[in-house]
Image (cartoon, rainbow, N blue to C red; front, side):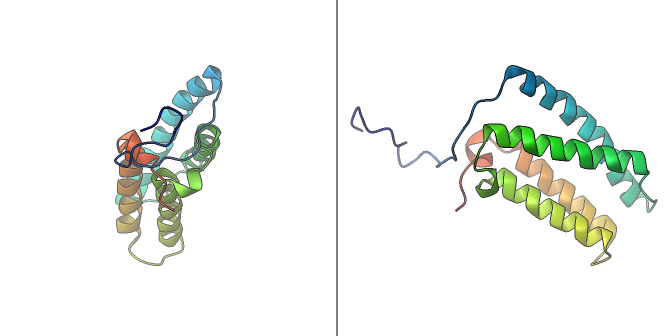
Length: 132
């Protein structure tokens, strides 16, 4: 590779544009992620136990999820093209299908959580790889 050629080697997955975010936003994202996990855990448990999810926890899961998307977008500007962003969109689709009764609710919600776990815990080169 030539010295002035800044393209990654062919074996490195191509990642989207990366921006900077203040350290305070990183700390905020960690706290919000913990709150999101609490809201999401109660939401998942309610569906698995065939109960109606408590409204405060549903609101917590939705609001904290929106904040997480914004804080993640501040760093990864092409989130909609990366595996983590696409998995979030598919997860929202699965949750919407469950909410509107387009299949077995517990299975769809569990599948959404399974996908979310893979999308958020995959190694960084794969999680932020550009898919298109």
